[in-house]
Image (tube, rainbow, N blue to C red; front, top):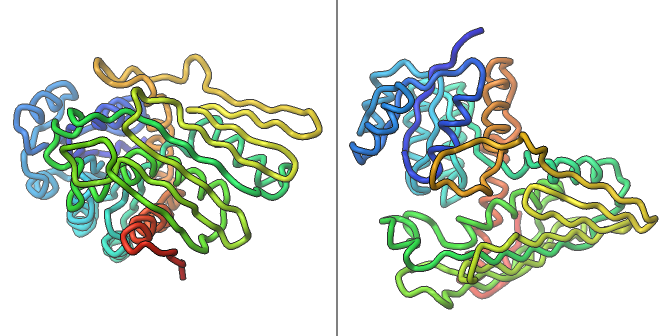
Length: 343
């Protein structure tokens, strides 16, 4: 079996999910790790028996890599993706693909021009609950999705933002609770619905944070062409990280999604459930929150299977851009105080 030589850029909070997932993935080897903080890069490289770099361009130039994982602040994703594409290196990028859809277009074009794969992490699509719900929706057994309720209440105090020089900023993070925490669930829901967006209308505010520029509250509606709509209320100033509440009200039943699990209750009385198995867990190390679960590995493993089989990865740049456009237009609606229609 061919071994893919992999580099990782960024040793922040998401790094263990990728590094430990790669350890579990057949046919890959971590060759290089880069971070602008030398001590962090050296520590990670030592653990994974890789070479440490402090400049991503030097790493891409020096190492003969097959793929690179981009785990850096949001605003750096376009530059790093395009640089890797120019060197014929496949890319797996953390969410969001970019801050601005125009940058996503540049990334997609560079990868297409250089015939390399671009995957974007959207690990919640790989949850047992999400997969079951997608399967039943596609079967038609639930009928039309009439409406969806999305309520997110997390705890991200000022101290969370003060540890970072990029979180809580418009130019580097691109927003707050919407683009950082809630984008995962908006992505899953637009994927479950499988329809084009007609319009969004929303408001944002900063209600409880003193040290950030961006929103800690977002509320509004996402209306789809065939009539389904998502009503959402998102905040990250609650007293703890509560489970996100998602309910799909369908013609023939209701669906509740909590964390990685789902329950489908048909009006006929039938019920279906899905939840992770007891062994579906990766030890990401000390200090890593338990709710990260198993699904980063599911997507990463599939990405490399697709590379080996020369298949297009399902969550490519174009797919990731769909979710980014929703988020981008929610911000635009709030800024302009009007409904934003999609093309």
